[in-house]
Length: 347
Image 1: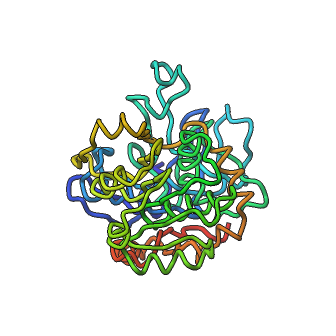
Image 2: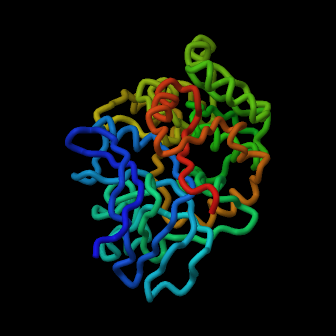
């Protein structure tokens, strides 16, 4: 007997079209698997890259969505740390477990990495299957709505680790005021960086959204910033714009750092002077996904609470799966910092 249908928003790699429909409900078929009933599932910039054909993904029709929270619906025989009904979040990434990268605790660099929502069916659906070790129980103080931000926060936690110490007198620039830039801004604020942070965002609507967070940061546009020719100790790029990053390198002070965090088009290039890198002792860092940072991300969400994680203040808007067209339009128009699908909010 075939499994009963469930609603899912599927992307067809051939036609590059999204289709909302009824598909076979996923099942626990291995002893290490967990079936999650999805509550909230975010739309990531990477999802948009996939839809636009700019990012590799599963070569068939499948459900996108790698940022989601939910409730355990069923578990395999080998899953002992969770029970049905637990409120959870899901780390979408898992490595092969037997390559040099995995053996060196860097499964995010594994050439055979399996990513839910990109290389396997994801959370833009009523149900999704994940494996043991990828599913984390949420503390009571973190809501499922807040939990939908756990995956992006886990990536930021990895970036934070890569940065190392950031002195509190550092002059910091965040480029891009989408949800990633906003969460970076909140994390800096949470850690005591108050009047020394500038956020650069070309869209006036998104700059106005950041104001709701009441962080006391300087909000400006790339055009205004270029005219000022400032200097920074640290630039965190959340825009994915090679042009913006190229300019940012010129703004770095002696010993400055550039964190390349935004996902750029794979064909994009930037010019950097090796002489400047040597003379100014610059550091250029990348941060890829979230190796072993989900526990830290959950702890950060718990600490942030509603002061930083209120959807309205962050510029996050929820949509039903059937409203995916409006969600995409809102993101393209930059009228929201992030769109999140509200799939089973009552659980």
